[in-house]
Length: 81
Image (cartoon, rainbow, N blue to C red):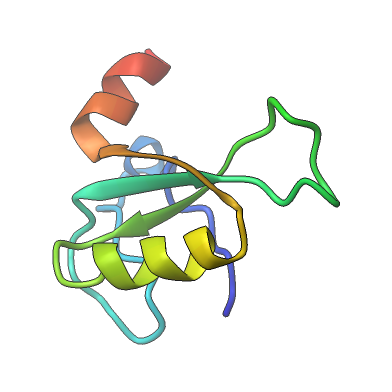
């Protein structure tokens, strides 16, 4: 599974879409994660999720111990400002 980082897409003028393979639905959620074998503890990678794929992507990351936080895209964007 790829780990595209679409959280900054809205800044580029495109609507952020779900990171699930083949999904083109608008993103609603940000799943913040890191791989402790590769990233420093404070580093956060992001996957975006639509309502339909949020649980699946969260479970995938959680099973590996990578998932750190799940927040709405609006809240993530507001915190980024």
